Image: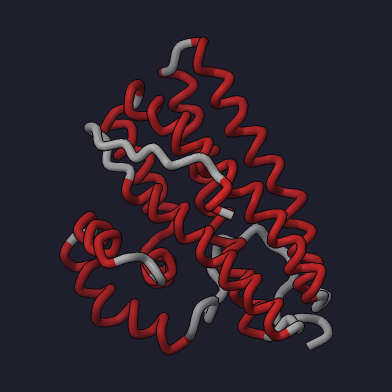
Length: 229
């Protein structure tokens, strides 16, 4: 779906948004992989089920963090003429919920064809939201929150993900990322985390496969395996 979106305006000011761009790219990649898997097999296999659960959980963590620790701070700092952009961010987050709930039910009921069609719809809606955020909201963060405000959001996200969550989050985030992005993201981590990523987190992720575990911060929904698998 990214080929029909407006071009991303990559900011290169005082705030380093590399982690946000990497997260958005990861969401798009993992949705593309999941829909390909469903359309190829025609079934909701256990790996597809877990792949959806991991995506759903990571998106929930990401958007909840923005709703709690990013948009309210930006609302307080930005002048009135920019409040409509933040209203749009809230509305777009809420607008994704019906897509997520529908796919959650279809995946749980092992309706692979219906789930694949719904994921195409989610991919379009999420892609449009992420590009809107990149091109309209991130410049407001740069202008009105700056590096200190962005660092505060980063601290909130690290606390939300936690050490246990980081073991899956960073391999998931960088699964399929280009070499430049991978180097940049890893350089943002403290040295102990980089060592853990190379020696423990990434090998474990590769052994388990994508979606090989259930992230602890998910929205909810069905547990276990697809009901009809």
